[in-house]
Amino acid sequence: MVERLHLDIVTPSKKVLSTECDDVYVPGSLGEFGILLEHAALLSTLIPGLVRVREGVNVTPIAVRGGFVQVVNNRIALLADEAITKSEVNRTALEEETVQLEAKLLDSNVSTDDRKPLYELRDWIRAQLQL
Image 1 (tube, one colour):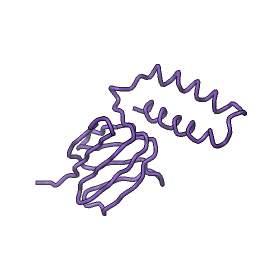
Image 2 (image 1 turned 135 degrees about the vertical axis):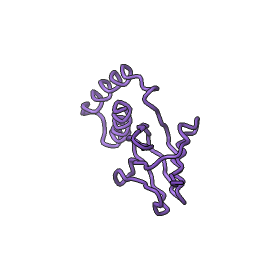
Image 3 (image 1 turned 120 degrees about the vertical axis):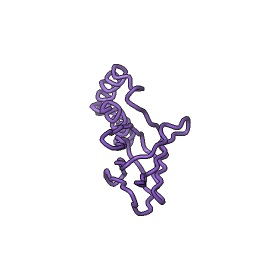
């Protein structure tokens, strides 16, 4: 019997996914990284982006908006601030929000400190649109 990784993706409000898988790719704060069977113990922060879960030839993408990932003994616990699957995406609303957001980012009256959360929101929207 081939051993597999066990993955749980949860947010404060719901369990998004609980599955056995072959590998997982996550958007770490220092860059995207992959988790394979027998990966060393790990704790990392996440940035907005796509988590890709591979089960055989099937890859399931899930957009996350920050959080943490822990790997111990072939078990992955991904605690996301928010997470969304393809079926939950409202493309029209996201595209409208992108237009408004880009206008705010182009506004010269917005301070550098106020831009950081806007960039994070932009990255979250882009991750959802990639689904």
